[in-house]
Length: 495
RNA sequence: CGGGGCGUAGCACAGCCUGGUAGUGCGCUCGGUUUGGGACCGAGAGGCCGCAAGUUCGAAUCUUGCCGCCCCGACCA
Image (cartoon, rainbow, N blue to C red; front, top):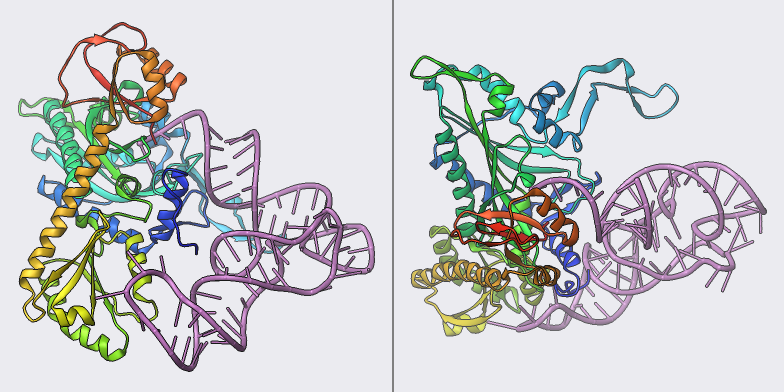
């Protein structure tokens, strides 16, 4: 294993791939386009899941589980939805193998052909709405607020670990409501949950917006998204929330009796975030020394590295540090005391940096004598010596807790500054073409037509990431066609 | 699906042009010296060279076919 990571500035995608591998997050699997998420990477995903799940529960949702297999006839029911996903579906056609009569191995048993093919879910709207038909009769059954944590498969032509894999993990919320207004509120609420999660937990600033019809989810009336800017100037869609109208209720005949005793189709939403967030997390904060994790999502928040020359020294350091380790744990800080003997301290420093551990404490015999600990922070790579009372380390631990909060805030601010410095108001087509080559968010006027959107994409590879929700209307002229425009939209090249 | 690259020890690679039965670094095992930013010395273990066929006295090396992976594009979260 070579020591240095590729530099972001020289080869961004190689840098990304190397971080994923070297920080022990995941690896490519024997199956094309699929990944093995390793324990350290999965621990980060679990922390994301926990935080999101708590937020879903706090907003009244319950978890459930629906099947992996979707009958083909289900997928066909909503026409746009079917068209949107048809090109990337894995299909199960048989249910049995048998010994190869012509030699070794197994072959598909031609007698075991399924009457109806099963699609491996690319998303679960159809199976879920088929089930909802049986669950919803009256307005009293609504709203129905369900989420599921699951894997899905989308047979992508080209994959990138975490960012786009053939199989990925995600959560998908599927809700049913009695009124359009309530469903729209839900769509917005969950978008807000995602934005809150991205900013407070991942320390990643996002723009909330609505997709253009061209970028909309197949089968949705409206698709909302959070968009983040990566360090190479490309945009990444980090989460989506869809207002589905009555499309799926109509397709699956889900009607309820309202308070006026009239039959009505239910109103739907769906929303999801995936293991793609892992990729976003890496690309938002990490540097040429490796991963940088926000403390709130770091599996190990504080690592303690004893520095010693003899087993006696180590025993002494371990004894002195025991109260502090106990106090850190008592304060809810995840701490690892690395007293393993097969690596030296210098090696450990580099390794934990690569893995993005926010705070490292170094303790040697000198510290024990002086009553100090070396405190190193991953975000700034700075070190300082702090005084500590080893017997009652409460005050020191309070300081560490504050430091973790400060790091969380600092990496958010750093990402926010980066985004601000890479967001440009663009008013001419020449400027647009020049700036898009350099990357960033381009705020430009657009005439609202899909023709213009398509031409811009064709000529520059830039897409409209979203029409931002939180920006004021300000009339102007379309950067491409010169026609009237009500407000600026966000253009970027995207992952 | 197009373009490019690569399959040799756990990992990263050399060897292939010019066929003669496999090597380097890291890692691993054992022993010793070390230990405040990726230690050093010594001794070891570990490979039907992606698969299959062909040429040849002899193939990691030459020929043909197949399989797989990665990167760049078109499609997508």
